[in-house]
Length: 95
Image (cartoon, rainbow, N blue to C red; front, side):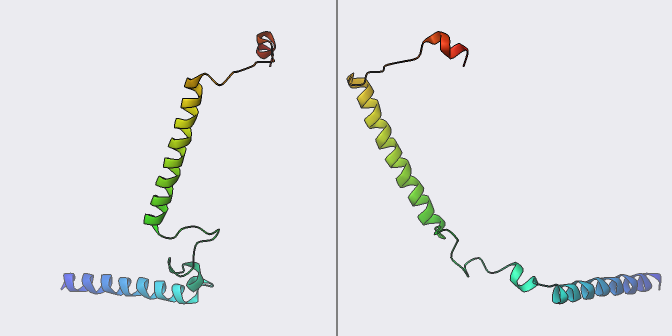
């Protein structure tokens, strides 16, 4: 008999908590607009919504960076670059 009374108390409390949750979700201002669907609007700033396309863009940019680095490395190795320093090393220590 005591276990049935305990079960009724727990079920009543759960019902009250769920009813309160339902009431707050219905009456909360702006609750419907707070969490729009992810794909409903395109991302702001012209972003790429597709993660695959975004990854391909990153890979393309990395390939361009590698090409530019290789060109710069070849330029340094060729000896065509000359560095001229105008500042005296003593001036660099004093900032």
